[in-house]
Length: 410
Ligand code: C5P
Image (cartoon, rainbow, N blue to C red; front, side):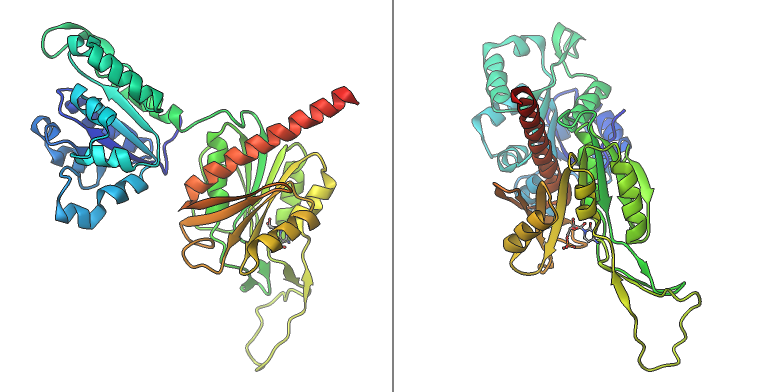
């Protein structure tokens, strides 16, 4: 089953008897690695106590729209910004109409309006309510605006009726949520991604390196896996766990990274060079630890191979994406690198800002090709990287289509 690690989900629980099943839903989502924040409508708290959800999710449950304590911890706008997905399960007929009307008189309604992420709902209601024209029209409206409806099940209902309207089983809902995070835009494509810093040895205990955390490269690898790609992640030394389902190759120096990348790109289709490769290495690496006997010592350094540049020359058919970490003249310098290194695209980020870039959890970048300069607004690296993967997939498809039509006309 697909993992939900690093996915932030708001589970909206509304006032229906199926709310008891939402406890199992939280347990299953957490087990798959998702981070869950539960938002309950006041009516839902009559069915299940918030403490149940707090214990299962490990997070405070949010319920009141105006609650100074909760607002101080995480208000509705912050919650809305935090989420990768809003899942409302069970979604009562009343909450569904609240969402349709865009009412913000409940916390859940306010979050829905402020959200910058997809919404899924798992309706649960009596079979007559489910078949009512008002419900049918409300669901059509939500569906038209992109809300994914997890159709209810048929069977005997809490009220004694038999028919459609029982909330879908938690295991089915979890499968739908996992599927929502996956696409096929890079299905079967072979991606090679480098990430993290490299270390260039000075002696057996010391090295030259940089502040790269690997977060951007790892988030790109995770997003590429979600898009269906077969990913080889070549990583310098970092402290973060690798994403699921990619082939991880650990390296230390730029030379190791180059060898690994060259080999992996042998049958790759797309190469993304997110690593912060050290530009220089020591000419003479001391075999023994250098003693601090002298006040001044001198080291001679030589240029490392420029991995991305060398690989784009060696493999002209590869779609190559580089990075430009700049502290000034961001776009101009990035465009120059795009050209010099013969890249298909370059992602430029301003590393002079402490809130984004190196080591930070957020980033704001520019996607630059020979024809386009596109700003990707500041957001969590995982979300920026999903956007980058969409851009890579579209540009790669476009290039393939152009090659095919050239072959046909030529
Ligand atoms: O020239 P600069 O290091 O700023 O170029 C950035 C791009 O070049 C990044 O994609 C980085 O991974 C790559 N690079 C490389 N090998 C080097 C230095 C940089 O592949 N030795």
